[in-house]
Length: 200
Image (tube, helix red, strand yellow):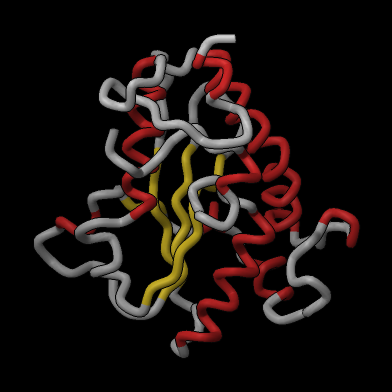
């Protein structure tokens, strides 16, 4: 089988003109997005309706209940979407400790995709400079563009996050385990994420 088919195998491969890999085809990208959607959609529906997932649908804390209530209540889609270049605004719009969520709403899918969960002590500065997720988003966007697929990425901030760093990071990890966003390093292997932040 050619290299295209291997992109969704056990190990991620880079995409794009400089990566040396063949471009992902439309059906491959949609299949990858659909798998993610099928996992996350019940979680979006549960939090939107105020109900909890059945115990068999949750693998949050390895037996711990730390942060379980916040995870079950926090709906990323109810947070105000910001442009990914928000940090370039001339006036400071965001400040303080926060959890943040990178979401895509592809027009060809019937639902949203939560791509990344992060935490920060300074929301107005976290997205400046180098950031691993920004590399993944760039490769993701390039792959979609080459396949003539559209995306609508945004970043959303939750300011009720704990100000204490360890508590904030514990909640971040609980959210990552709940949503399994594919651009977090902890979960890339779960989705055989075919996009890489590394230059080709």
